[in-house]
Amino acid sequence: MEKFTLIAIVILCTISSTYGYQPYQSNIPNGNIVPNPCANGIWPGVGHQAVNGGGARNPFGVAFAAAGRNWTTAFCQADSDGDGMSNGEELGDPDCVWTKGATPNATTGLSHPGVCTPVNSAACCGKQSWLSCGVACNTTTTQAAATTATSGAPQLFTYHCVFYIISLIVCALR
Ligand SMILES: *[C@@H]1O[C@H](CO)[C@@H](O)[C@H](O)[C@H]1NC(C)=O
Ligand SMILES: *[C@@H]1O[C@H](CO)[C@@H](O)[C@H](O)[C@H]1NC(C)=O
Ligand SMILES: [Ca+2]
Image (cartoon, rainbow, N blue to C red; front, top):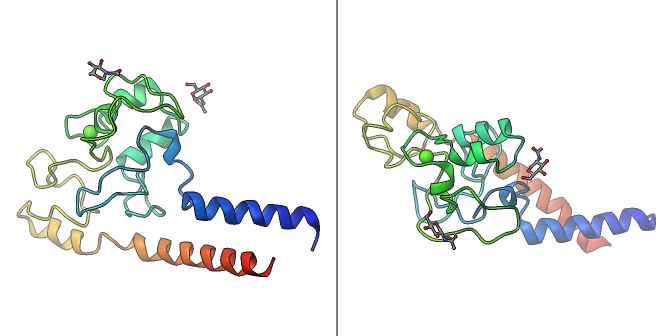
């Protein structure tokens, strides 16, 4: 194998094991610790409907793409999920002053900027049928939709597994 290919593989393996292949987290404040409003733990695929990313985008992800995947003032001040809190307030940058690589104003008390919360509130009801929680809106339509809402996750899981297995094999063989 050529030396250049080997170097590329080593870099790829290092990146995939260190950062878990979530390339855009660092473009938003606290992108690696956004809480999961449906369960304990975090929501690594912040801009996606599936917790681990991939597949359809949630409202925050749609706005993120429209902003050129950049933490612009307008994107920070927007309330993408429509729950009354701006994206900046939810992600610990209430004054929209954060720049990539800096420590945000707050690193605790965060909430998900792409999921309207509280998920069962009147303000959120009916807005996010793709969500795997928050079915207590008391409509059968919403409940039926919610039971199928996690369909994006297995596909991405497979994708990640394949990526990691190939990386591991190549890492082991080099
Ligand atoms: C992102 O923002 C930075 C500074 O805020 C700017 O230099 C850069 O051009 C922007 N990139 C895009 C794609 O808008
Ligand atoms: C954090 O944000 C709050 C609310 O806007 C502000 O009062 C405070 O000065 C900020 N702290 C820092 C260190 O920027
Ligand atoms: Ca919001």
